[in-house]
Image (cartoon, rainbow, N blue to C red; front, top):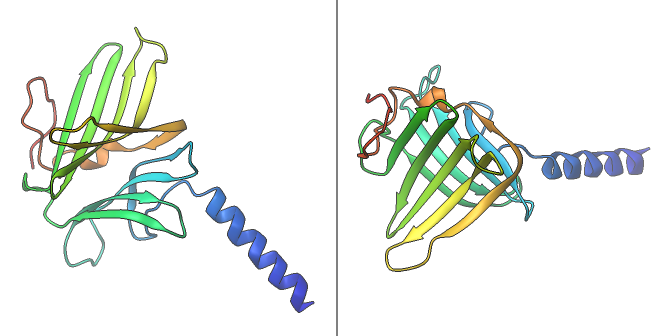
Amino acid sequence: MQKTLLIGAVLLTTCAVAGAESLCQPREEIVFSCSTSRTKVISVCSALRPAGAARPYIAYRFGTGQNVELDITVKEPGKRSSAALFHYFRPGVDRTSLSFKRQSTTYTVFSEVDEALMPTHKAGVTASVLGRRPVNVPCIGNPTENWFKLDGQVACEDEDWNSCQEP
C-alpha cells in the first residue's frame, strides 16, 4: 500500500512538472506564460494588486517547475528602472513586450500577432547584451496572455507608437 502511494505521488509530481504552464506562485497572477521546445517555461507574474501583501511587484521567471534558472523581480514596477512595457495595436496587428534588465542583459518577453505574416502569432523571450547577437527563445503552442493586468501599473517603454498607459 505504501509503495503504491509513493509511486502515485511520484507520477503526480512528474505530471505536474511536465505539464507546468506557469512558474507563478499561487498568490500571483499570470500575465504571460508559455512552454519552450526545451521543456522550459517562460512566465511573467504579478502581484500588483495583492490582497494583504506589503508591496506590489512583477517577476520574470525562466526554467522548470523544479529549477527556476532566472528570476528577476521588480519591486517598483511603476518606475522605469528595471522593467518597461510596450504595446502597439492597429487592425490585424497587436504587439506587446515587457523588458527586464539585469546588469548588462535585457530580457524582453514578447507576443506579436500580425495577420499579414506567417505564422501570424509569435511569442517568446529575447536576451540582448550590447555588442552581441540577441538570443531568441520561442514559445511552442499558445501562450497564456493577460497583458491587460499591467495597464497603468508598469512603467512604459519610451518608444514611438507605444499605447501603454503610464502609472
